Image 1 (cartoon, rainbow, N blue to C red):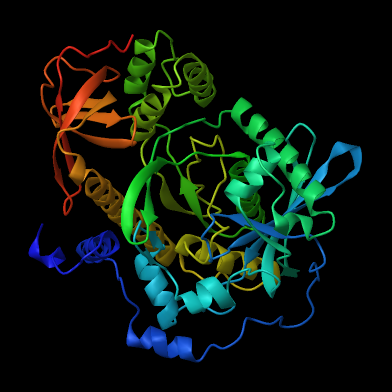
Image 2: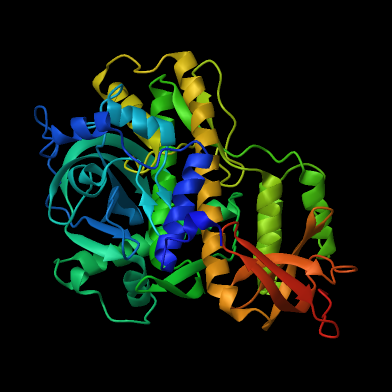
Length: 499
C-alpha cells in the first residue's frame, strides 16, 4: 500500500486518509477555515421567531432517517381531511435563519455544495454544531421550519398545496429499518412511536398516502429503478462485511413526500414570478441505445422518448428477471444522464425531470446537507415576505453550474472510498471463486458484479466472448485499496447465458 496510508493501522484510518486525499484532489474542502470557526463561535442558540408565526408544535411530528443520522432536515405529519383526502405536512429546517448569505459559513457551504458521506467519515457541508444541533430538527426541540402543506386525494393526486414558516417540535426520532419492519409486520412497534399518542395511526396514514402517491406517479411516467450498492459493515474499526442496501416502506414515505414537497415549492415560486434553481434530468439523448437494450429483452419502445412506455418495461422486466433487473436499471440510468441544476426564470422555463415525470421540480428539503436547498429556502422566504429576489440572474446561473460540478465531484469521492472499502474487505480473499453477472462490456473493459458480497470489479482475464447479462463464475486475482481496484478472471466451464 502507498506510504501515505502506512500510518493508518485499521480500516477506518485507511479509508479516512483515502477520503481526505480524494476530497482535496476533487477541489473540495475537507476542513473548516479559521474564519468559519470564528463565526461559529458567535452562534449559541437556535433561531427564534422574528414576530408571530403559526404554532404547530403540538402536531405528532416525527423524523424518519437512517439509524445513525443526526442532521435532521425534515419532519412529516398527516391529517385526515374530507372526501377521503389527506393533508400532508413536511417541515424543513430553517437553516437560512443562522447561515446568512455572504458569510464565511455560507461561502464554505457554497464551495462544497453538499455533505460528503463516506464509509469512514462524513465531511459535513455545515459544522456539526449547526447541522446536527442548532439547525437540525432534533428530538423534542422547538424549531422554526418552512412547512409545505399538500392536500392529497385518495388516488394519490396532489389537489392543492401551500407554504408557510411555522414553529414545530420533533415528537419522535425514528429510523427507517425499525419503522419499515413494523409497517410490514416483520417487527415490533418502535418505542418512539408508542410514546406519542396517535403517532402509530398517523404513520399508517402517511404510509397509505405515500403508497397511493407513488402509484400515481409511476402511472404517469415516473421511472422505477433498482440498483445494488454494497454498504460496508464495521466491527469496531474493521470492515467485516458488505451488505446490499435495500429500500423499504419507511423510505417510501420520505421519498414520496419529499418529491411532492419539492414539486409544490417549485410551483409556488413559479406562481410568485420568482426565479429558482431547478433539478433537471433532461430528455435522454441516447434514447436509441435504450431502445436497443429493451429490444434485447424482447420488448419494444417507441422511437421517441416516452417515460410511460419505459416505466411499463421496467415493471415487466423486474417481474420477469429480478436477478438481472438491477443491471438493466443501472444501464438505463447511465444512458438517461446525470441530474443537474438549471436556473429557471419567469421568461425562460428550465427543462423538466424526465425520471420523475415532472415539469417543475427542485431540491428544497435538505438545507443542512445540500446547498441548492439553502438557495431555494432563501428564494422561498423572500417570496413569502414580499422581499426582493436575493440572487441576480447571472449569479443564479453560475451557482447552478457550480452546484452541478461540485455534486459530481462529491459523488466521485464517495464512490472512490466505497470501492476502497470493498477492496479492503476482499484483500484477504484472493484466490476465492464467486458467482456473478456481467454488468458492462466495451472497449474500456468488461465488468462483473458478484452476488455476495455485492461488489463490482473488472474482468481482466477470460473476457473474450462475454457480454452484458452473462452469468459467470470468476476468481478474485488482485485488489488495490488505494485506487479501489478489484480484478477477476473468468473461470471457464461455469458460464450461463443471459437468456
